[in-house]
Length: 66
Image 1: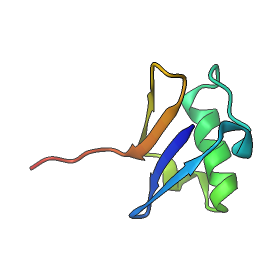
Image 2: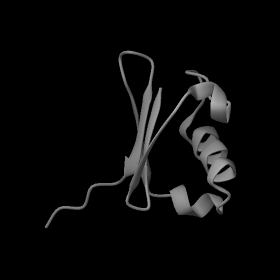
Image 3: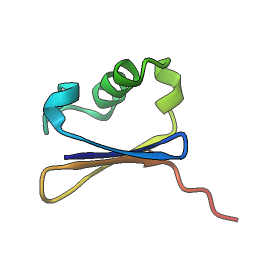
Image 4: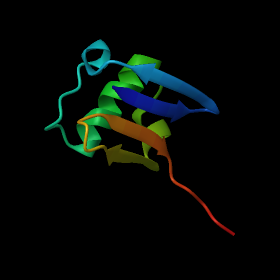
């Protein structure tokens, strides 16, 4: 499962819906997400990809404190 927080909304997708596999690097995952959401790749530039022990992903904006 991939949980994505993008532009203030949350999305839950199966990896197969966007062609992700556990061994992909962050850049490739961001490219697939940009294609899925039909936005330029740079929209995901500052996003963090958390790999969960279950094999899923959480994709979220970088947290800014202060």
